Length: 515
Image (cartoon, rainbow, N blue to C red; front, side):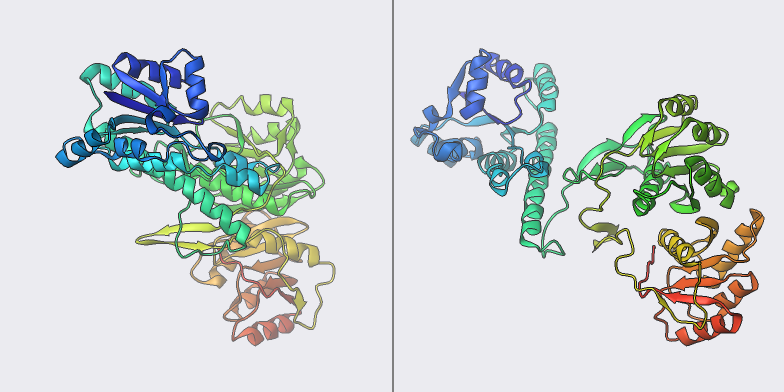
């Protein structure tokens, strides 16, 4: 006798596959709700208790955990001793195991769920069935996705059975599925225990959302994976209203834009323009239109082909201005209907609406390196850990708002980072140089090319000044105040330089490297 075991939470289409196998001579065995569902759908099905001789107990917690089930799954049918054991105990081998697990992920993500609700959705028997069937994939087909039914039926129709390659692929998917499931459970318990940092062992539960045309470059394969439990504001959770499919680089840049928008959520209209994950222009203003115009003014050349990020709803007038130039993506918290119509006139422009109210960053930051992975906490939004201390004779009178604005933007510029700002507007930014003074010179050059004078502006540096040269350079350009972390052995040199030039200097005590 050939047997197929069904034990599923997600029941869509299982009756089609069960009937198909039944027509090909398989006895369909099932339990609990799956048994009732198949029976109601007219499938001839045997209840699991008939096979085990033992009823479901503990409110359904124990159904399939029985030697009559697992011996049927784990038996190698080319092993004489296994066959002898099956015959001795009157156990039939099981060739198909179809399982979908209890909805732990969905239950844990529901704010109404209690810990007891969530724990009850930790599947035991289902995971055990999957692992047993996957281990014995030479003889058993393990199916954990209902979408695989059609492929399996086509292969059986064509060849009489599934191939070894198919069973290996199904097995790899099965173990990936249980690893993801167990990772979700482990992380949930770590959070409950208050030990979310750096467990000795574990996994990062992710699942593929989309396979991409290519990665950073056309010769690199790429895919987008998402964390199913992170329902906060993010690009994977956003709504795309139109435009071409997002590329790897698009997503990197868009994520950088959302990261800066987190800093300005709930405040005055703010616009940032991102190029290669760096802000090349940013501004707060009294209106969306003004914020966009001021952000663009900082570096209109670099803005070409960049990404617009807005912390508010985009209106039609600003949309019309945006359409006058070439951008890859526009991101906003909302769109006026007329604004959407205008933007959609450019067929390739990606239009993204970020949705939700949870702007927090979840979990940990992961960076893959050859042979391992670096894990760290996020550099969270806000200025909760900074201690603003004036260390010069001059106070930054009337300049503190600009210093804080420049400090936030500088946090999102690649190290070594320098940002000049005035009146809530970036007027020059220098990113990623090996010498900090070179970043300052580049930022000053960009400001002058855009028609800005640095007279009366402020400077932000993401890390301390190792020498006084950056302060001397700023003084020549007319900078009136500098904000930096401090912490260098040569801090005194920088402070003395600021005092020599009559510049106010503020230490934050916090560094914001961005490599």
